[in-house]
Length: 277
Length: 277
Image (cartoon, rainbow over all chains, first blue to last red; front, side, top):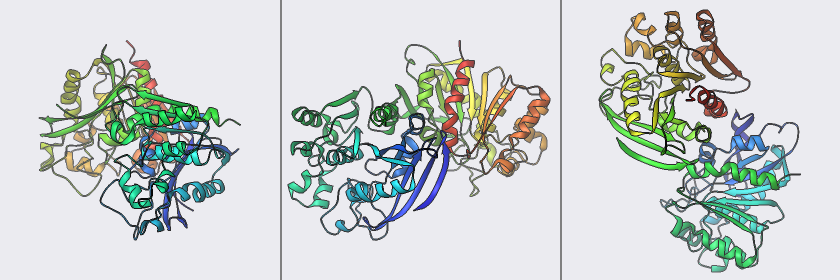
C-alpha cells in the first residue's frame, strides 16, 4: 500500500492511499480518515460508499464527515466506485463503467475481469484496512450516497454479522428497475433476473435477507426521487419483512452533497451509538 | 444578478450568482450562504476571501463553513479571486493573472482595465449583496485564506469602520516581499514602492492604519511558512502598533482546506460574538 497524501484535519489524519488490487486487477485508490486517538487504541470503522461518477475525492472534499468523526472517534473509509485505468472496459454512458461499479461482481465479459467491486469491498479492502489502520474490525458500520446507498444496504443485508449498523443517503433502493442502474445491471450481470436480485436491496429482503434496522435520509426536492430512488419501495419491503426503518424525508433538500453534508453528523452519531464497545 | 444555482444546506440556502461587473468589466461569479432565519430578519455578513488559483467554488466545497454559519446565523459571501474570461489578460504563472487578483486595483496596463478586485470587493459587490440578500451591512466581518488572508487584513485595515472583526487563515502578511506575491505586485502596480505599501498588511500598519484586533490561525507544517507567509512579521507589526493579535500556531497542520475547515468553526464563532446586535 502506497501513501499518496496525508494531512492533519480536525485533530486526526486524512490520508489517500493506493494499492494494487488482485480482485479488480487494477490499482485502486481510497481515502481514510483516522480521528484523534488512533495512535492509542483501535477505533470503530464507518464505510462510506459514494455515488455515480464519484471517486473517493468527492466525499472527501464535500461530505463534511471529519468534524463529527473526530468528535465521535470514528475511522471513515472512502473507497472508489469502480476500477479505473488502461485496459479497463469503460463506456461513454455515465451510468456505466468508470465511476459506476454498482458494488457488484460482474459476470459478463469483458467486465468480469475488473468490475468486481463487491468482492473488493467485502474481502480485499477490509483486510488491507485491518492491517494498515488502527481499525477495530469487530465494530464496523456502512453507509453511502445514491449508488453508494444501494451498496451500503445490499452489503449490510448480505453481511448482517459484520456490520453493526447500516444507513444511506438518498439510496437507489431497487436498482434492478431504476433507470440509473438497470442498463449497468444488464451489462455487468446479463439478463438473468436471479443474478440481479442478489444486488437489489428490496429484492434481497423479499428473498429473506435481514438486517437489524436501517436509517435512510432522503431530500424531497431530489429530482431523482420518482425514477432513480423511490424510497417507498424500501419502506414497503422493510414493513413486510419486519425490518425497522427510519426514513427521514427532508424538506427542500436535493441530491447533492449539500444534502449529504447536512445530515452526515446525524448519521455518524447514530452509527457511533451502535458501535460502542 | 443571475442565479446560477441554489441548494438547501444545513437549513439555509447555498447559492451561486453571476453579475456583470462595471468595475472589472467582466462577468463575476460569487457564492452566498444564507442561514436559516434569513427570511425573517437581516443577518450579519462574513466575507471569506480565497487563496491563489481558487474561485468561489473551492471554499464552497471544502471550507466546511455552513454548519457553523447556520448555527450562528451568519451570511457567508465567497467572492472570486480575480476577473476572468475572454479578453482578460492572463499569464501561465499561477501567481499572477486568473485566480491571482491579490485584492488590489491594478494601475499598470493592460491589467488596469480588469484587475480591480479592491474596488470590486469594497464597493460594487457589497452594494449588490446589500440589495439582494437579507444582509445587515452594519454588521460585517472579513476573513480569508492565504492570498485571501492578505485581502482580509488589508481591507480591514483600510475600512476599520465597516468591519467589526477581521481574521485570517495562513495569510500572506507581507505580500510586497513574499515570493508568491512580489511578481504580481510589480506587474499590477509597477515598481513604485508607495503603491505597493497600500496593499501590504504589515506596511499599512507601519504607515499608521489600525484595526481593533486580529485573529490569525497558521499551521506549523505549512510548507509556505518561511517564504510566503511569515506570520511573525504581522506579530511584530501589531506589537509595535499596539494592535491585539491572537496568533494560533497549529501543530501539524498544513496549508490546505484540511487546515481551514478545522478552524473555520472557531473563526465563525469569534466573528459571531463581535457581530452581535
